[in-house]
Image 1 (cartoon, rainbow, N blue to C red):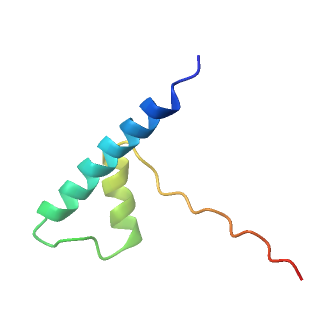
Image 2: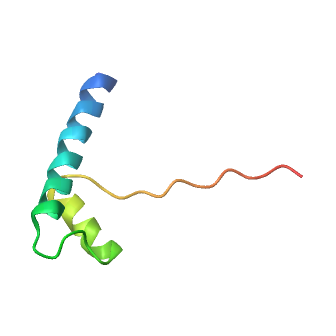
Length: 58
């Protein structure tokens, strides 16, 4: 079963907004480490994924 891309994008937006709201309401503000940010994203059901850099020609 395939999900509608717009529906998936909306779910990601909602989850990311939740993670950012949690970061903004934290006494410490935005996380100081990537691990902390990953934990916040994980609680929102998201994951931090790095995109591969495209190879440069010549």
